[in-house]
Amino acid sequence: RRDRVDGAPDLERARALRTCFVQKYRLSRHAAMKKAKNQLVASLPKPDAVSCEAMAKQGLFNWVACMREHYGETIRSAASQHRLDESLVLAVLHQESKGDPHAVSTSWCLSLMQILPSTAEAFGVDMQQIFDPHVNIDTGGRVLRRYLDIARGNLSQALASYNLGPGDVQDRMKSSEGFDPAAFAYTRNVLRVKQQIEKESRRLAMSAPALVPVVYTPAR
Image (cartoon, rainbow, N blue to C red):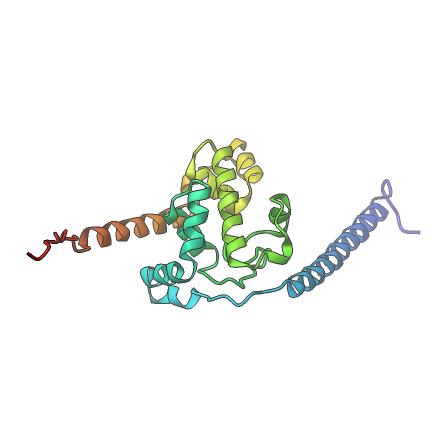
């Protein structure tokens, strides 16, 4: 008989078996969830919509022109209704999907503003419409407004929350390691694009020819 000290070998074997079981369970559960999500996304209607993703490779302002041409009214409406800068909505669109209305991330974020199914549900959005560009952009605007209100107007914190979730951001900020939303890569990228869009908009406005009033003089 092999010597045992306080049943250590049996305990180690039990732990190894438990670890193996947990790993297999997680993998099978992950595979099942992935299959279910694949089926869900495949079942959702994807309306015909223009993708500006390719234009992003030709420069930011070519991309902005494409987005404004095809989704300009929706972007302006979302910005106005949810009290956001149009440049902010465009910058988030650029960061999230580059303007691809059929985008699906590895985290199952969907369409132009990369809305999670759970977020759509929380905001009362019908999942059958989540790939509709107008519904998706409006939902993204509602989410941004909510996170800005939670962050009391702190745009950096709101953007970090859009990427990580507000609970995660608050937990990180309270942790001993600390967390600066303004230094977060996602936040910096969105704010950089927002500033570039605003700068170019000002330049175009200044270079636009002034309208000369025409005075009508009736013939005598």
